[in-house]
Amino acid sequence: MMIHLLRHGMTNANEKRLYCGFADQPLSHKGMEQLRQLKTEISFPKAERYVTSGLKRAVETLRILYDKTPDAVIEELNEYNFGDFEMKNHDELKENPDYLRWIEGGEDVSCPNGESRKKFRERIGHGFRLVREMNVDRILVVCHGGVIASLMNTLFANRKNCYDEWLPQNGRGYSIEISGSAMSCKPL
Image 1 (spheres, rainbow, N blue to C red):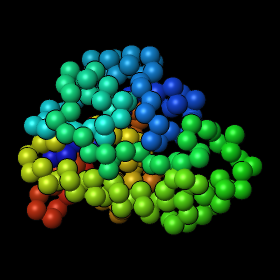
Image 2: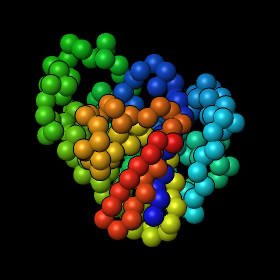
Image 3: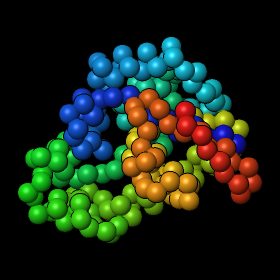
Image 4: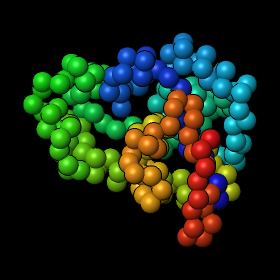
């Protein structure tokens, strides 16, 4: 089985470096242009099933790169729920005690009205299991940077030192080959 994880194209929130998780942001004009350019430069993998998180930025990326609508939506693969920090940047939050507690906290510390890192990992782990249960040879999932980095950090913990090293650029990602209990990966 081959599962391709692809990060959506750039949004205005990405350009402004805002925490954007559950906010249903469309691609920015720049993001659409970058995807169209990438499509001329690299050969994106084909699949039997095309899956998204259901958010606009993921669905629009699939449409631009593959001229397709999703065969399935798996909402468990939505980006991290930043709660009250949604659509704000670090400078706006850097003196907020709740933000500092979240930044410095451990796996169980949640954003106010959001989720903890532990809950996020559990949710997307469930989403990844739903992808695997589709039981087809090739699946492409258009989702989010945090989802991909967290999944890769969990699945291949021995390969890189931290989550940030797995974070793909917009329009990029990883191919994961699963054969029995063995897994390997390569960048897209």
